[in-house]
Image 1 (cartoon, one colour):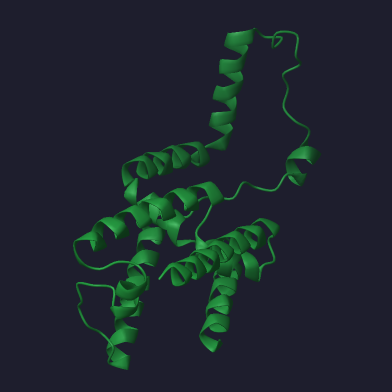
Image 2 (cartoon, helix red, strand yellow):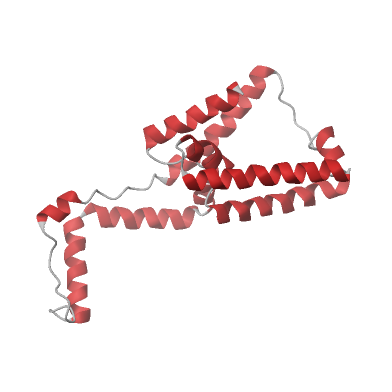
Length: 198
């Protein structure tokens, strides 16, 4: 219980310090698609480096496409008051920050296992998993299919259990509360079904 509460505070402080929701699945997705993310970062740097030049180029392209009058729509710069009242767009974290997050999670878990004396390399999931789910040659196909299903569910829910269950729920986000209820409700139902079948 104490570990769970401490983890929730970690996610809350992460949001307060970084200004973003903590999520392992989103960080992993960005690292896996590093080529696309790198191009996106370069494009963002180009757009934010000279916003006036970008605005002028956008205005010129609009006028060349629709004419000087904007095709019947008035094309003009927004008033200064509207510009000042508009909050600046939130920039994305560098992809290297997501990679560092994933590496530090692995190093932290490795260090904790060494300190507790519980680190060991195993080729199975333990006797409890073997009794409840499967063991032997079907172990790895089962883990693969389960991982694919988790990935699909994570994409459909817009985040994983760490993003919704710890970071989102600690900030009382309605979407995270619903998603976490579905995550854990399904887990309890499937576990109960497996125990009943076995």
